[in-house]
Image 1 (spheres, rainbow, N blue to C red):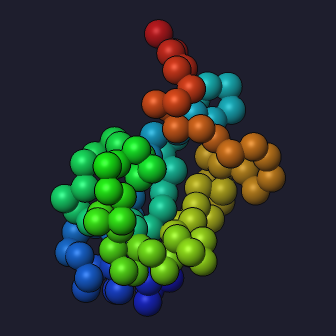
Image 2 (cartoon, one colour):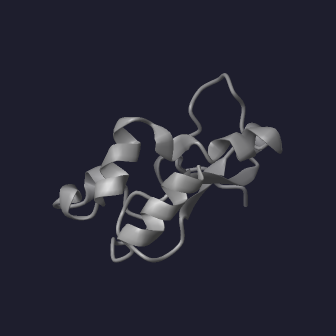
Amino acid sequence: MGAISLAIKVEDPGPVLFTQKRVGQNKRYFKLHKFRSRRMDTPHDVPTHMLSNPDQYITKVGKFIRTHSLDELPQIWDIFIGDSGIIGTTKKNLDFIGVSLA
């Protein structure tokens, strides 16, 4: 994971990890961690597939780690601390499920 972190940092300075707010069990919020695969100037809170030209925002390292699912490695921490599970449905991004805890 150190090599991936270094490659991300060298190609596009900024945070190595990307966090996303997700809803877990009992509608409890948690932060999901991934390696950052998009440039820092990418519009925030917009899924890659909804960008007008998504390829312009994905870094070379990002393309590689996405292709090989290496961007998901930091989620091991989320599993370890109990925020996410190993088996089960993928927790959806809050923007798409319309969950309100209020």
